[in-house]
Amino acid sequence: DTEVTQTPKHLVMGMTNKKSLKCEQHMGHRAMYWYKQKAKKPPELMFVYSYEKLSINESVPSRFSPECPNSSLLNLHLHALQPEDSALYLCASSLGTLWNEQFFGPGTRLTVL
Amino acid sequence: KQEVTQIPAALSVPEGENLVLNCSFTDSAIYNLQWFRQDPGKGLTSLLLIQSSQREQTSGRLNASLDKSSGRSTLYIAASQPGDSATYLCAVAQGGSEKLVFGKGTKLTVNP
Image (cartoon, rainbow over all chains, first blue to last red; front, top):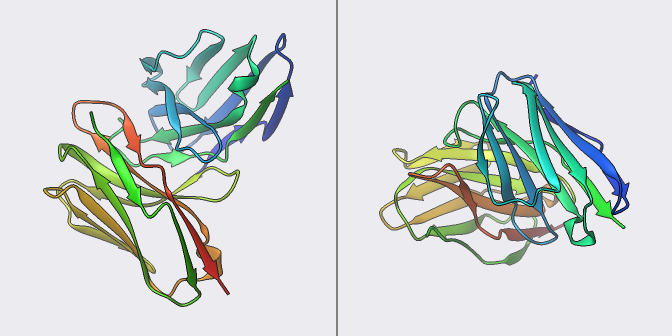
């Protein structure tokens, strides 16, 4: 298995909702990442997990809460989002640190109403 | 602070043409450079990874070169096809940091 999967593909939520994004990989990678991408912009790093521990939080608002239950799974919990949080959320993984090749999932298109 | 620039921002070519996409970076202290392809609304597909000690990497019709001292990389696409139409992003893994720094991408259109 050489892919990163993300669910759901699309998500529409209100500002008072709580939802979660899920990312999974079975390549034995020990680093996993969340990125946010707005239209016509490059991805922006949000969080990095290395060996299931949070190693980077790029000053992301607390309404985004990451979780890494095990080495194959990464979640992003969403609560009280704002319309400007609407974006494509990408998950990626790599063998070890950021200096290994990163593999991206297809993304979740999030719309906040 | 590392800055990555991709020129041109957009490129339109006829099918069959060989083409070169450019990526430049300001700090040569990099671990590697990765080229990605992104189709509209989709995730990123890794095309090639060049380690800082390497000069080039090849995969099929793609060839990427790296000149670390001058802060440049090129992605050469041979015999372009309409299916190559996408946005191409380069990203550098910066020494001393755990972040990938992305360029803004080149949007390629290959016309039949």
